[in-house]
Image 1 (tube, rainbow, N blue to C red):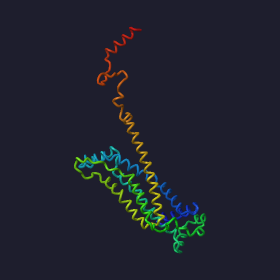
Image 2: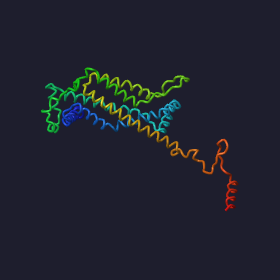
Image 3: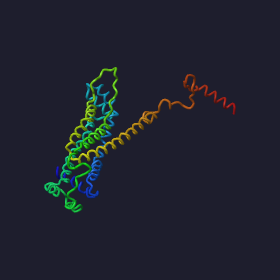
Image 4: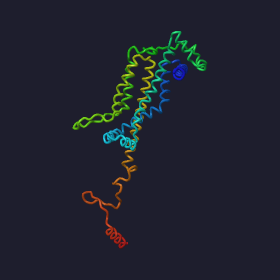
Amino acid sequence: MDTFIIDPMTNALMLLYDFLGNNFVLAIAVFTILIRLVTLPLNLRQQKSSLRMQEMQPQIQSIQKKYKENPQKMNEEFKKIGYNPADSLTGCLPLLIQFPILIGLYRAIIVLLGSTPQALFELTDRIYDFVDQLVGVSTALPIPNKFLWLNLAQPDPLYILPVLVFGTMFISQKLMTPAKQKEDKSKKKQPDSNPMAGMTQSMQYTMPLMFGFFSLSFPSGLSIYFILSNLIGIGQGYITKKNMAKERAAREAEKAMGKTTGIPAEAKSTPSSKSGKNGRTYRPTAKKRTSKRKRRSAKR
């Protein structure tokens, strides 16, 4: 943990702090952007998978109800529509990756902003030699830990940051959560046949509440990281959702034009077809077409 997570994060924050004019909050902001760039492919895959499953929910539920007693046939039908139940687990991967990042960043902030002799000794022991030569750690210490009303190494005494952690994470979860379908009141209420959808709805509230509660004891610097990361996630989710909506609209337009399902019925009518009474269409018989050609020849 120290060698592969805490030490690299400590040195990265120290370099950013030096390059960005000795501004530790700005160093945390740039560090957040770098982490989001590294995890971008995984986050995009998770968001697209979540949105695709939202689109397929009606088909998934129909198959689950139809083949409830035949799991093998159910899995075959899932494959036909391109749905893999295991893909639902990919939504947990970005969260699992967050935990070592949080632990490492928590320790890095405590070490970098520590003011006791023990903390300073631990910091110099963790700094790489080339970073020490570039920055001059002995001259850069101690790092100021004040920002507005905050001590970046301590929790927010006004509880503003925990509320922002909860709010931004709730919006991020809400953006990727499928809306509940309207139920027909005339029908009896049936138990939910899609447990994954129910779990997703539950996580929309439990995860923000959990991390908001944890933020009560997080260092303020770590809460700032979380808020910025959630804001980037909201923007990324919005763009992904908008692009996928455009792709879905394009597919539907192509389907309507017959590019994917063949020529529609209205396109099959020929220029020689005429509209009769009551909007009915008919084609001239062979005899009538022959007589017309004879009359045209006679006129010539």
